[in-house]
Length: 77
Image (cartoon, rainbow, N blue to C red; front, side):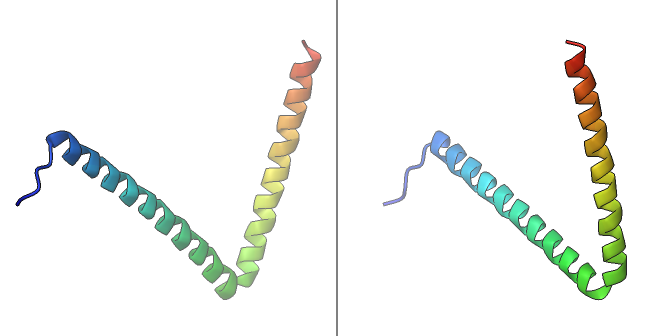
């Protein structure tokens, strides 16, 4: 009456369970991060806005630098 599970089937099930647990863990981390940012925005609006401006400026400067480097590399071809 007992179930006969081969070692290979046992490994497959264990791998599947580990994979699903990893995916759930990643989803929970992302959701916690989103909620943390929401809380920061609600409780510290000035600091949050300043940080977004700083991050936006950094991203813009990085984009300009990458564009200039890319243009120079293409010119040299």
